[in-house]
Length: 244
Image 1 (cartoon, rainbow, N blue to C red):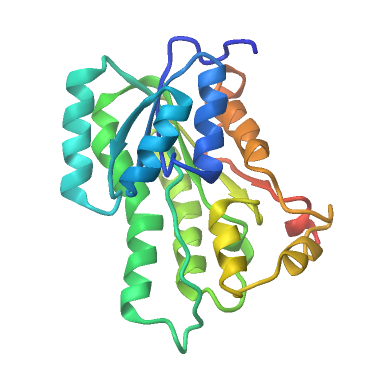
Image 2: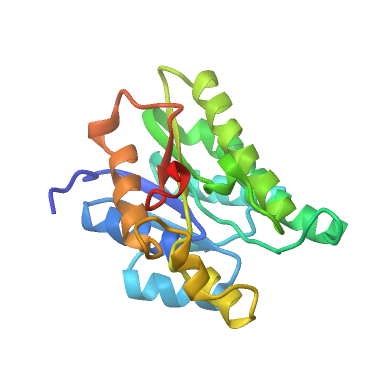
């Protein structure tokens, strides 16, 4: 590895598994000090032990919890260089059958979460820092049967652009929109019979799902020194899905 993030400190939400875990692992391999966050305490402890990194149990949709973490962080660390807003969830449902509870849950975690994290940690971030939001290809083109998830991820796309303009010249803000990535969240949907692996693979022009480490590679580029003139960018990492 080239130690592209030597001396950098990064927070990664949803860091106990899937894309967040792979981003944490890649950043650490490049020299960064990483703090991972998750709502699930047992998963968080296991991931932090495997990675040998710091952790903080957090529900990103809880404003008091996010504020408390920001206060804790400012006492324990000198600076924050990278914030990766990755935590997210999906509760399938069309406009006809999505409950208000499921709507609120997805909007609060997927969209309000990145807002709260960015808003509370902004005073701790130094000039030249980077914020990376993880959205989805459905934030760009939508799909049937996931109305709240699509709305929340579309919000993340435009939140990224607005933040990039607000913070231009100080902090870079970018967004990755993955297609279907082979993560525990996808495996759970398959196990529940919501969707089949064969179908998920068939809609990718490349013919397979993405790998978490492939998203981590793009995250490293966008948060690293080689992307210092890149801000407000919405990058698809999708096996060609949005080109089809």
